Image (cartoon, rainbow, N blue to C red; front, side, top):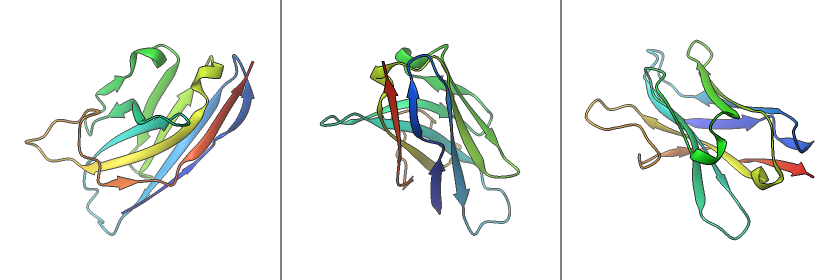
Length: 126
């Protein structure tokens, strides 16, 4: 399984960006995944931003609720993170993560994500 992020860049405060994460695997049966976006600030641990379950249930960290939206296109195996009303404190490296959806496990920020993308930088200037 490989994940490829795109859509990062530089934007002014109040602006918008949409990140995309394309999942590639050898499974032709559309195996379900728990998908998430994390971000990492310089010198700090990675933090969860948004999670989307195979049934489209979503979870957000408090700091982005109402501003960010996670969604997915199952047919294309792409997960999106629409980021609106961006703030300088959103500046970070953003990572996409995936975990095979197992029925006996939950899908949240504490899920063990086996697959990670290379990251895409988001910079918000004031």
